[in-house]
Image 1 (cartoon, each protein chain N blue to C red):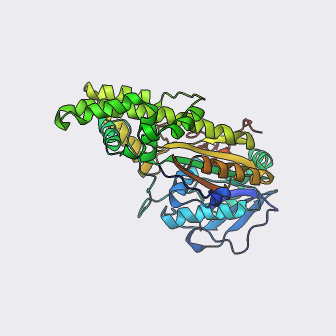
Image 2: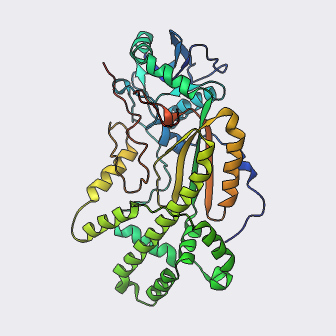
Image 3: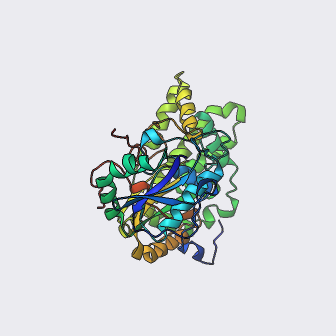
Length: 158
Length: 248
């Protein structure tokens, strides 16, 4: 693990959003009067949304296993560990458990047991790629917080 | 010609000179009784290509530099000025007025923290000698025979990564939230995303918040990267329905 000596001064001012940031925000957040929302998807060229990792599949776990297996631990095996361990202990004190991946575990078991959740996963992806469906599925196993999705979508009163 | 609506500000808000919106058209205002909708002419159904999406965001980012503006979601197209006045400004006047007052003098700043894959996984192993042992055992089994064992191993890695991410994300949030009027946690797009949170910050508190984010970037540089976006209009804090937000 490399340690950069120079401080990260550049970050002390926020930067304008990139396309991926913009997509994430302005298609989902902000004031809405539903009947006036119109967007053509013709020629849409977006959706570089950060490399998405589909969590709910055995394949994903295999990818984790592969990623870990290709790590070279020789540079920082136990003999080189102490400084890092100190860091970890310090940081590891506060706990917050999340149910997110337990949910995934269930999903995987059901896949292994012949259950079929693939469709859910696909439709979730589609939500991400296309736009106008008025409702985004509110439960995603990856979403650890709940405050975002449906709150800003308002209906016209008339 | 239909009008694309960017947002709503007070009628006396001063817009930057030469503000251009979708399709390089000038941004103008439609005012009604103290409120102003920021609009520009657009086709019946605007396209959502890179250029249009960025233009919408940039217009609002330029306005929020100096003025309070309530952002609309992309794609709000109203047939004419009269409709903007009636169906948006008049119909929602009390709510828009309340939100403009509540959000006056604030901006949204978004902080995203993403682990670097290798560094995060390495840290997961450092925390768990048991996983290191599992990894060694797996290495001695022929891959074809170890399919499900590898999946189990990956699942344990994922669970540990999740725990670590939740804990680290909570720690970062704990450092920043006290400096903001409010915050909204947004979707985490992958197991490596540990924070994606919009903060509502008073303009005069910006330097303190900037400094706090800078410190976090330094503190976490070995494990991941911090992206700091803004100032943005308060996308995550606007709402046409009444109800007092926690931070008001």
